[in-house]
Image (tube, rainbow, N blue to C red):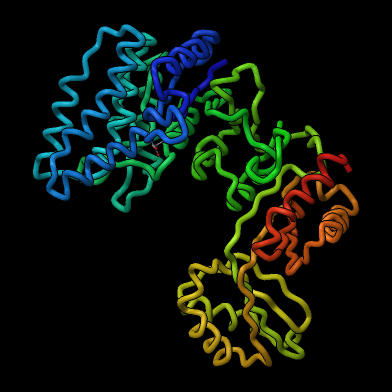
Length: 440
Ligand code: ASP
């Protein structure tokens, strides 16, 4: 058994958290490759080290002295060194960072990556594991995307030589031999790449929550956790705003059939959530999860006999394409179709879009509705259950929520419901209650 373990920023925010992490690693000898993030928040109003690094960069670029911010960062690491009684000094490293900030070849990715780099150095010293710099094993191509071929080759060769290692998350080797980072939260991606190349049995992703919850805890009080979720379900939920894992983190492990286990560093006894390719395990409820977002806008296009007009849909979509707007959903009826887009993208260009629809498709009528929230009710269990949609709609009717749009994908993995922004929270609670509390 081989496990790759990634620890998020809050799991490594101070020396006390480092101790918890070391206990977790030492309690299971199969945890052989460790991917640390940079120190995160110790309390809600705290600042992540990555954000402090970005601040130091901005300070330097604006011509001011970055030393005070760098000192703040230094103090975060010194607390960890002192708290764990490590005999390591980062003085030289900070010297290099300061020189870099004051030098002519300053660029952001290098500075932003130092949070993970330094935390990796401390973690390797503390665990007595070898340190592998991702600069040597993770490569990006000219366009800035991951060079999977080269990364897999270099990473797997290196891991084969080193039985236990700490590999910092978030960055690698970019164009012109510069350091390049993934987008924010990218240590999840590093962990996934390491897991795939180590041929791990499990990729454990340690954070500060015990996995995914059926609904957002800011909306539903004490929502139940999700035990097992498939990659496809997760994709639907993440797209709709459920964020625990970086979106790109599933791809490397998915192709290798390696499950991801989301775990809580502060409650290691909790099983957390399993993210898997496929499962025979029945979901605990008909639905796996509910997620949603506000701020959409729907354009309703009506034309008599639309159903028999070949190419009508294409012409309408062309109006969006011409204006460089991507659409989210497209429910349609016999003589109507609705195009749902992000309001923020649409507002500026709405009149151009409407006139383009008229010019290209000659509809009878075009009507715009704004302030729409979309809710995705996701679950692999829905297709084998009769009456799921009926239950959702009767719950919403009971809660006096007016449903303004319905879209069910043919995969029957999700039902998307459009409601007014102001009904968003009420609708989510009503759906949660009907499936989870009354366990229908
Ligand atoms: N430290 C980086 C961030 O704050 C990357 C990560 O934590 O995964 O985004």
